[in-house]
Amino acid sequence: MFGDNSKEALGLTNDYNKAPDASCDILVSAHGRAAASSTFECIRWCFMVRSNLMAFPLEISPVDVKRSLDAGDEFSLIDVREPEEVQICRLEGAVLIPMRDISKQFDRLEEAPMPLIIFCHHGVRSLTVVSWLRDQGLSECMSMAGGIDAWSREVDPTVPRY
Image (cartoon, rainbow, N blue to C red; front, side, top):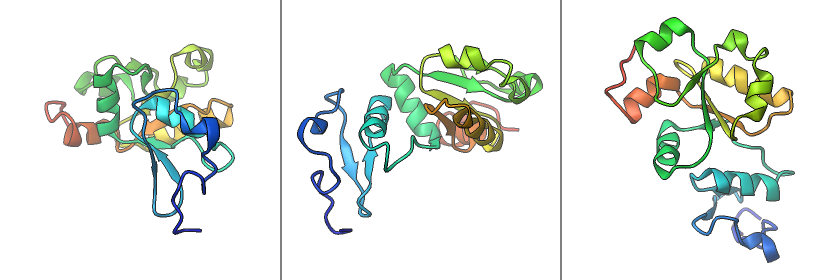
């Protein structure tokens, strides 16, 4: 089983071989799990087709977020840090909703373009928020791994670190 990485072995046959986005590549790991390329459409497609075997990714790398921004993909970038932290550095286009206000802003998040990419300083608060949102039924959300600190290290060193 682990040696057969074909789409057929994973149940990705017939109409499921065509992703909604022609540029989407479905990759199959050595462990027989399908993995999407970095576009959100591929992630959604894999989630819909294989939802009984895989969950929407819990985290997304800062590099993949940047790639999606550059590609013009639709998503919402949500900053759950405190206002004082945003004064130090911020990501353009991010909406500030401090972690303490997430439950009060849930309706706003439900109406925002999906997926939601949640970030904080190092990724701990954002993982907590993503877990809570998923418990509320909002499955199309991911934490940006390593937070804005990782963004500064991996994507844009002009973003101040603190």
